[in-house]
Figure 1 (cartoon, rainbow, N blue to C red):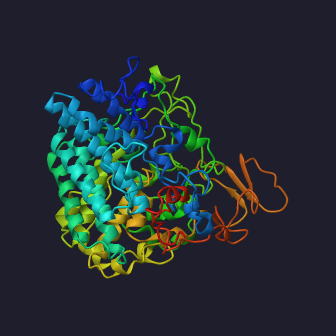
Figure 2 (figure 1 turned 135 degrees about the vertical axis):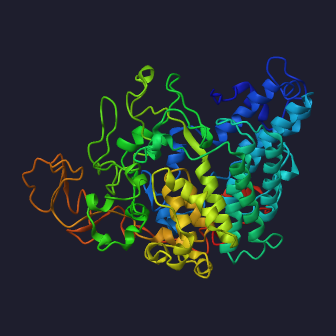
Figure 3 (figure 1 turned 180 degrees about the vertical axis):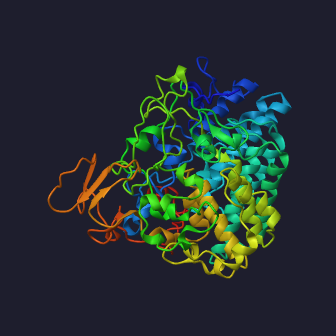
Amino acid sequence: MKKYIILISAALLSMTGCSFLDKTPLDKESAETYFKTENELLMFSNNFYSSAYTIAANDEPFQNQNDLIFQVAGFSAELRGGTNRVIPASGGGWSWSILRKINTLLDNINKCPDEGVREKYTAVARFFRATFYFEKVKRFGDVPWIEHELGSDSQELYRPRDSREFIIDKVIDDLDYAADHLSDAVSTFRVNRWTALAFKSRICLYEGTWRKYHTEATQYKEHTPEYYLKLAAEAAKLVMDSKLYSIATPAAKTDANYRDLFKAPDANQKEFIMAIHYDGTLEVCHSRGFNAIQLAGQTISRKAVNMYLMKDGTRYTDQNGWQTKEFKEQIADRDPRLAQTIVNPAYKREGNKSGIQYPMFNFANTGYQSTKFLMDLGNASDNDKVASDGKSYNDLPVIRYAEVLLNYAEAKAEMGELEQGDIDKTVNEIRGRVGMPGLNMADANANPCPYLSGAEYGYTSQVLASNSNKGVILEIRRERAVELMQEGRSRWDDLMRWKEGKCIDQEMLGMYFPGPGEYDLNDDGVADHCLYQGTLPTTSCPVVLEIGKSIKLSEGNSGFVVVIADEERAGFNEARDYLYPIPSNEITLSQGSLKQNPGWN
């Protein structure tokens, strides 16, 4: 059922160089003789998948969320802010090699005599061109639009940047073509009509909210924020109305449904609209297991844990004394997705070795150790040889149906068109997977969450503050953070489009400890962690941490675990940091046609 994504051969890659010899080479494939059959177009376009959804261990979806609710190994320059963010000489995301390959296919596709095949692979190429340019717009804003293969002497190499609005409209055109010409059959590892529409909902929601919240962006006047929000809602609704996808709720296992979705070897084809396929038998694997229990630094923050509701649907941050609850009390009776995302007293990893018996601070410096995407061991006898922590082979999501539902709800809320019925078939459908009570729109708007709207922890945009749907928008944002935890850069992208970069300056903290002593974090009746100051005590705890050295607490000998000191962070620059800088060498090579983004001079 699965079609494995194959890297294109070196011979085909050689076709995408800067120029071709005048004579057709006889010993290798060339543009003059290639692109004539469906198989040749398939082989060439395979490279689009591997380039767009890199399967290297350092670029997997769970590696790309690096913000104040999930941190990968080492704090990024974005989180440190200030002068830690610099203009690179080269690189820095200003790479166009995959676009050249896409344009090579589009420029040569007329060599194929089959009109249906031409339309299909034109649609595939245009889908990937759209997603390529969306990533560029998110990162740099205005960028040059190139739609043909360029040679080394092409004057378009010195093309100035086209407007963000022009690029996004081109992206939408590409996605509309893709949706109209790709198969409408479910195809989890190949782009189809629904992949194009799902991405259209993501991209149009991003652009609509960017324009709504970035009120300073007055140069884009052709389309209103509502124009893009309407397109986002319409695209999402088409996916919803297809009835091909749904929220996976097998056997009503509310205590396991969420985790099972991500640890299973095979992508759930009802929910994973697009996924990256891995194969244990072929030893094509990723490193989620290794990163979760052997790589220091991957961790979920206290802020993230605070976002999860109570199991009865009330807000955890409305509980008396919520600020200083210790771990076991803090995670008790919460949204079941929390227990299915982090190591907790009830967590058990199936297989012949657990690897995790309690939260391990040497691998998760906040104490909140992630288990999302972590496979069980020995759950496939024929793959036991690779079912180790360094060789995970479960498929990873690129875009899920749950996101499409959230895109629809948010777009409708931002347009002022949201109704309770919309909430019931989106947010409440997602919550139903784990048995959570539904969201009531009227109640949310009557009593917006103070935690999510306060300067210390939440969102403070004046545009949001004046929105009559503020309360329900906050709850949709909560749902995005919880449901999409660790699934790519979605959280960073959300903060950028909402113009909430100031959230980056909020504290990154971990568990609360009232002071030195022994702690039983896995609630088995035996202490497993000992915190001390001064003389090392006699203890049988397997984990011993010296306060001030191996663990730092916010109040000296008590408080929250500190994972990065305030003095190590220079702050988010509101006038600069919503966009990245163009590398200095690229500006020089452009002969003055490229201008640097504001604040990066």
